[in-house]
Length: 287
Image (cartoon, rainbow, N blue to C red; front, side):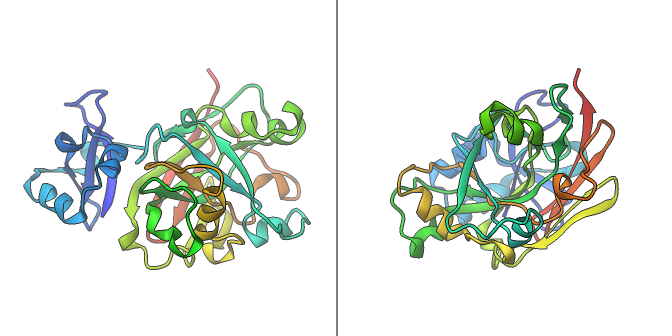
């Protein structure tokens, strides 16, 4: 199942929760039982069979008639893994890390699959990073690696937008501001349940800017795989339903191109992962 959060002209600003049809052309609204919120659905522990029953009773809407929002909004945590693709290490002339590098983003970075990304005035080094995002399905603490995938709900496409000057040179070398500016985490188009993803470590992952391909990799390049990440994190941090893990980005980011390239107002970023879908985000000036 592919879960989406959306709005319609009839509901105004009110967020709704739906399930995409197999062909991706229709959305079945299942909001009434789950408060229009995917995290509420995940916390409920509802089975897919129950969701299917709700879908069968719902009147479908055309996808073109709704505004898709991020499939997860306001998770307690957005956890990110740096230097987690071999190619991304190589383009920086850095050795393969012996343990993962974790950092975080705030939930206020989240925007939808077709929303704008702000080119904040305080940075002139805004960069792209397409990533596979993992959505946690149940409370996870001290999880053994062998059981870690049991705690995954599903997957979505993410863009870990980064202000490299603030990430690398400013703020005392801490990543927080460079990674957490408003709109710096587009997500979508759907939260794809793990039952539809045969192997999350064998997916093509791509990013283009203004129609020019910048990143083209595979999640098979992940240095620390999803089960390993969950096991390591939950040794000390409790993951909760709806928490999001950004698993890293392949080679081809702007900062390490020769010469370096950065995003500017008017640019359009396309991010795509095999089987999960595609998001498109325009860069706009800071107003």
